[in-house]
Length: 283
Length: 257
Image (tube, rainbow over all chains, first blue to last red; front, side, top):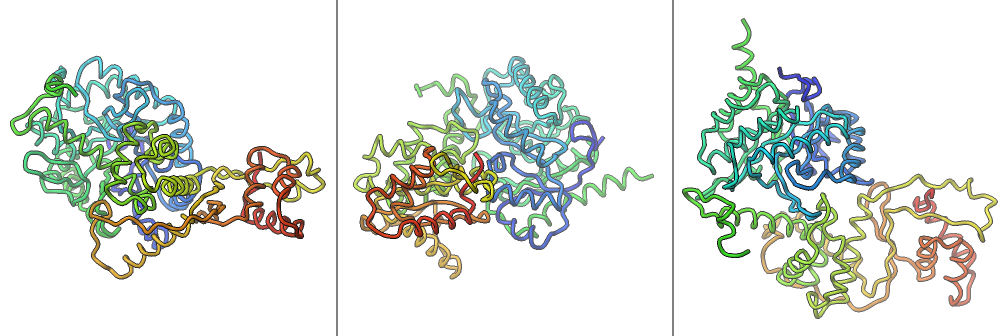
């Protein structure tokens, strides 16, 4: 189950994001890291230092691509230039799968650079699934779609978010990048049970899991990726791995980034849940 | 937005109104976009000061919202905007325009395309009257009315000094930073380029600038040199130009077409 068609039948363990403040440490100290996740858009450039760093990282490490601007849920078709650059990068990194979000964020050629929630309708699911298939076919790479954290819901929604996610991935025949922090954040903002979410998605399609920290405000929680993972999220992670199996796991820490050692140490905490699962599985 | 529009498509919850839920995204949008602007244009921010810089950024993005999947291109039309609506940078319009052009050139140099360098042997025997030389896409050649390269270097050094001293600083995205002292007007010609993936600025003689821009425009080598030197003061230009071309070749500026 962990190694499946949606993660290219790879058996990746715990990874962290490749971030600028850590470049020097990684290139000089060459720490042992199972894999790095890169933000595709940061390397969909024509030359210069970003690609130099990427190539040096690729010499030593496995890399998986994660996108933030494909906007599977936007009404516009996939941008041809974007697809070509993405495919060029896929060939460079040989990523076993690539991911982006179940959201919209652009309209009529204007970009918000945000991951905006969608109305959960059958029409939106059908349109989104078609775009995912186009991206998968163009890049010739398995695609996992990530659930986003959200702060707004639409009157037009015809189903729950987890029903919508399930509808999309079945129609697209794609994988899920299951972000358990996003499930927790959204569950608090929208008053639903996060375990009901996890229990009602196709677990066999989970190709990767994201864990992250968030920030609590008086009336809502914001997905800030600038804190360690909180206990309720770890518990959700444990439940997710029970359902989906031990799956490639990535800690997102994107703001107020501490030292490499601190980020990696936080990511490796996932091991205690993985080991607990393996202990139960071992006769 | 018309009053009530938010409530017509976004649900309220037990803690937030429809408008308040939408407002979270509005705040995040400006936080993200302005943050990108602060990172890409520290010199322009120093020229204008924080308040005017933010007003300029908001006005620019209202007219030219992001049209690219990457934030890297956010400032791609800023020079055009400043030329169209100079009032946002008044009274330092000319300096602001110079700085915006210079800082955009840095973005281009940072991750612009580098084509294979042309080999000198391939040019041997070529007729300069019929020879065109292509220049690396990541190069920018700027004619400016202010020494903004010196200003940016001074800003970077000040930032490094701040880091080295472990001084407690307010967030660069807040506070009441003063506008930079106005540099004197001085005509300069500068190339913004990269070498070994490091960013560099190189002052150029006026004649060198004109040769390079003519070559970039597709002029034949002989024509580019002749026109650039037509009104140059008397001197041994042959040796000077030879040294320029040797330097530019060593920097890898000439590339295949």
